Image (cartoon, rainbow, N blue to C red; front, top):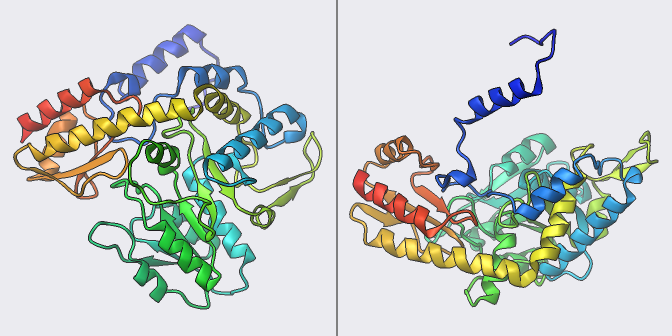
Length: 382
């Protein structure tokens, strides 16, 4: 593909885009069941498009948007039981996790930094380890797929800069025993980072609905940072991840001076320099619009739907649950798994089985009708 010499009419461009992207699965198609993202809320789309020119990489030019980000961090901190938090809305859980590891490394005094994390941890930590020169020490999982806290303790040494716990694993939606990890972190004087990229916008509301899920947030003194992604169950436009630190020192440890900006000198703690203010404004608008009760209604629906589906899988011959669901994720195995996956994809379903099971994520765009149709196709294939 060569760079064009002459431009084409807008109508031609839009028509070609429609033709090419028609091959994509869309959230409105009713076929995406394996994604942790969803169709953004209609209000968020309006806000994002209205303020698409805002750049928080140069906040001096956009002081209003910077104020909104401070309010968003304040509201997310409150949701996570922290009176005053420090952080940013970033490009996603990957950047948020990298920032947490970077802060822990920069505040440590070891020349050979090591991070202890569960084998269920997100691949973003592999990127963090490679980029930051941090050795990853993988802790074993228990039969219920939560991290083995005893194994974590056995792997702590003088080079350990931090521990990671997961609140909503990508494969099974499992929540680690964060209270036990917090106690361990306190005992050894090591910071604990909680990757709640998915669970952060589920667990607070699910717990309010009566679901028994371990505490995972800043209620626990050992927790020093949390990843929480509004572009997942928060229904914000992509990209909108989040990193919250308990203390300002963690943010300062990863801040660098950007002296040339039009808005004046500023210290940047994010990996990206230029970053969209529109995402932040959309998150603010959604939290203000939906409130705790609005998100609780959404979580109530998807949690109930996931439990119903889990019971249907139990009734389905040649299919069985990997484990009982914790959040709004249900994963199951089948005989001839990859053959089943291939046939379901041929029917247009957006799923994957690369972990050794099929994972269904009950996002806000997923309806009972979609799941009934999926079950029909699944049973036919089986």
